[in-house]
Amino acid sequence: MRDSRQRVWLSLTKKGRTAYHAHGAALRAIVGSVTIDPSIPP
Image 1 (tube, rainbow, N blue to C red):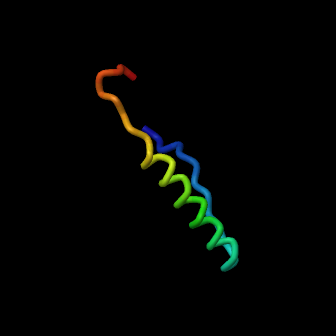
Image 2: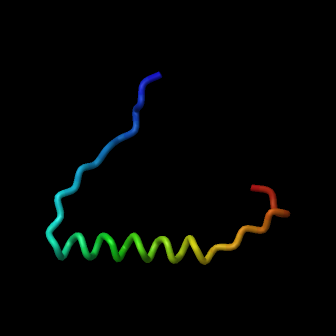
Image 3: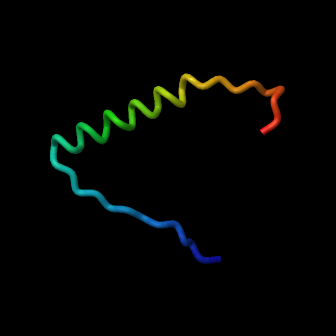
C-alpha cells in the first residue's frame, strides 16, 4: 500500500512562527473545551 499523504514544508519568519504557534494554541483551546457525551453515537 502506498503512503499517499501530502506533506507540506514551511519556512517561517520569527513573526510567522509566533503567529503559527498562536493559531495552534487557539485550535487546541477550542478542541480542549469540547466535551464528548459517550451516550450519543457518532
